[in-house]
Length: 224
Image (cartoon, rainbow, N blue to C red; front, side, top):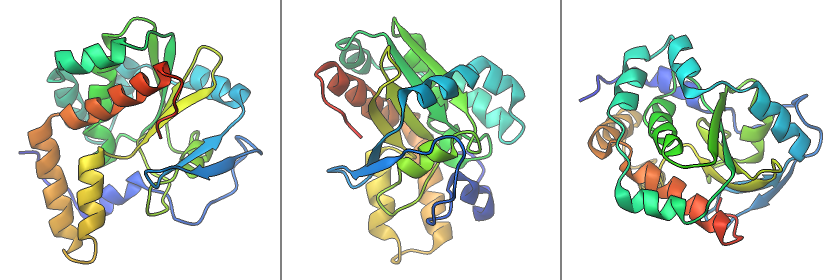
């Protein structure tokens, strides 16, 4: 089991619920989705600029300082199920995955390495990573159901850098459990369950969510 880290470290995964002013984009129009998270319209020129300034997974792993061993371990053990590949490949690209992530974030380290493994096995799919400072406007425009900007935030872009889907912070199953137990369990109990859940899941539920997002985009739908 992955050693549990202090809750204070996990807190770097989220922004304050109060939006801050960002110079990245001046036009962000949030829309509430059926899942309770927020989707938005950010100019494609902004997404293009952000994607082009992002780094590859290899570069991110090399530069990581916090949780470096855990990043490497999760990336090395990442396996994509055939059923997940089939769903993702049903919507041929080109697609681009813009990921806002922080090396010290417990959710980022337990999800992003597996997303990268999926992208590597899909033709026409590129993945780039930006940090939470560069990607602050993206995070603020795609908030969690409880109103936070969080890492990781994954944006699916088409060949024209237009948004076609998003995925925020953690797998649906884990997200719903945490939201359902806030106020019922202590913070350290929730954190311990989260880390145990991630260790046992090994990215499987994350990849199901990401494949569903790509599959929906192939049908002309936006899943966010």
